[in-house]
Length: 389
Image 1 (cartoon, rainbow, N blue to C red):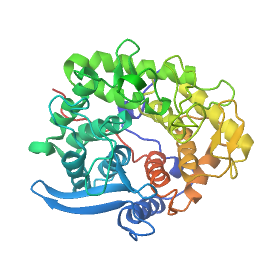
Image 2: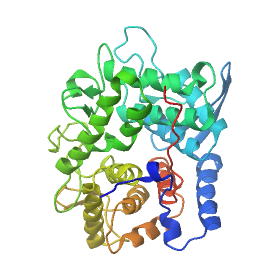
Image 3: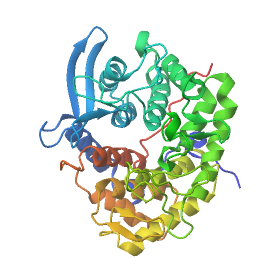
């Protein structure tokens, strides 16, 4: 079978158009979501906040409005969203804040070359360590910024910084983000928590890009890591429900931790896993098993009631927590990029019918997943390859 994904074909699946929505309607919906989340009412709608100017230019951050902190996760998603929407001014302001307040450059620091996963709005750090999903999205957004806009100087030499951060992720002198033997992303690089992974951190679609344009010495490693993650999806998802856990061992088995009571369940992190393998299939068409995974998880949630399914489950499908969160509705729609389930279009329409998340508990995480999912489902989440050196 000839497997030419969107990268080869240059054509990105537009699920909303397939469902009968016009280009004007789709653009209006995406622009409305962006305008509300980035420039809506500061007290009840926005998650993007301008933070003044320094010698490098404007600064801005994405705020977790529930916890009142700035997280590398949200900043990295903000970078990817603004890149995809061609919002260079907002991209540069987010990147400037990231480098000014979150980047750890102290020589000898255990997390030198990484980003503090949580800081206050004034830039004071709440944590001295990173969360690798932030670095993964940051690196990919920087490579694609170089591809879309070209490189500037200093911190705005996007490609040089992507190379530097990616090199540090694998070759850090104290704590790498990778288990070298397993070719697998770690949950966190600190030693005591480095013995397991997080299925939602596995981003083979991004690793394929790194294998094309990252540091030459590591390109074959990232190609192998992409295949490892594709195999990991098969190990870490339940064969009946398609659900994965928040955290999992390298063999895919759920991990329980004292600091996350949902670590061994399908919970908030795990919502993203289906998006990761579905986008990978859409972009690269390298593992046909990803189509079955998307079918399986949509079949499970359809049985639960497409308008009423809950938010947290055991991997076997036992409901733990009710609620019908925007973030999960959003990523289940992205599953349709790979799924051939007969009700697949209904999951896309469920996303279409969602209002822009605005309540205090859903605005940040749900809003970011909602906006990224709109881009995925409209064919507007695309690859921009930089000049390959």
